[in-house]
Amino acid sequence: MGFFKFFSKEKKATLDKGLERTKTGIFDKISRALAGKKEIDDDFLDNLEEIFITSDVGVDTTLKIIERLQNRAKRDKYLNSSELNKWLVEEVTNLLSENNNGDEAADDFSIPSDHHPHVIMVVGVNGVGKTTTIGKLAMQFKNSGKKVMLGAADTFRAAAVEQLDIWGQRAGVPVVKQKLGADPASVAFDTLQSAKANDVDVVLIDTAGRLHNKKGLMDELTKIKNVMKKIVPDAPHEVLLVLDGSTGQNAFEQARQFVAATQVSQLAITKLDGTAKGGVVIGISDQFKIPVKYIGLGEGINDLQVFNKQEFVESLFSQR
Image (cartoon, rainbow, N blue to C red; front, side, top):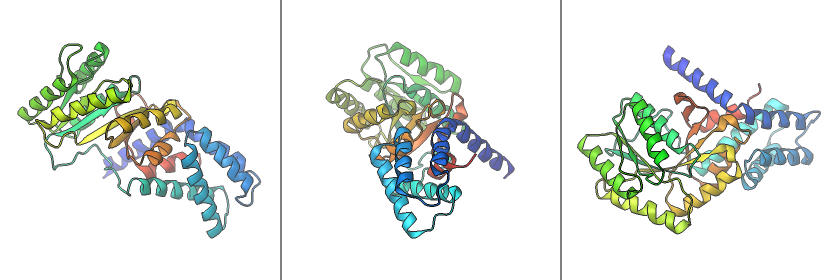
């Protein structure tokens, strides 16, 4: 019990530290906007709207939050800034839960037990931390007792294969690869074939990080999926889109293009520790109705966390 309590505190400390710049950008501005206020009036709500939008929560999601606060103010008497923080935590958490059908991700790196191997196809543009996220996931899955294999299906960049190879060595897991420029679907096929032969629990397939025309992207990802199904009929079990949280609105646009090109089922939002744009997690989760499964809060292996809505929102609006 003591270990798990310690780990929970350590995880919370990492979350608080990783969101520090966003917390400063949001919480401090809210505190200044509230100074001298005895009620939640239109002037304060206008300021709050600007704070959220400049933190890349997004216009549509911001308006939803403002409307919820207005309705809450009509029902409940506003007391002080602590009360407002409590309202924000409750309303934003409820908004995210409703958009994701109320489903909560497991609070660890577990996988479903109803398919073997569990296949995760990872998509996203170059530079968002896609390969690094795959490597960290491989280490977390292995540390949780799973047998893991990686597939280097981003065959258009030598650096992508080399980077995945390095992560494979760090994690002590095999990497299936072919020569530069090989057919990505062929790599995925070989990976799943090897995974089945070696009784692997989790397979992570890296894909090309290019945002070429939507049809080309769709065709390539569809081909990879179809070829994998020849080995594992219901693969992939997850399509994980990796987004760079520090790019703000650009992350929204990338999400829009990948959602149009393939059936994205989960999101990983990285690089939140180096930005004041952490509100993008709320906006993207709300706008695309796709669960955020992982968040990246730094370079360390344990800085990749399973996303917990309640903990994230509480950290964002907590008084320091």
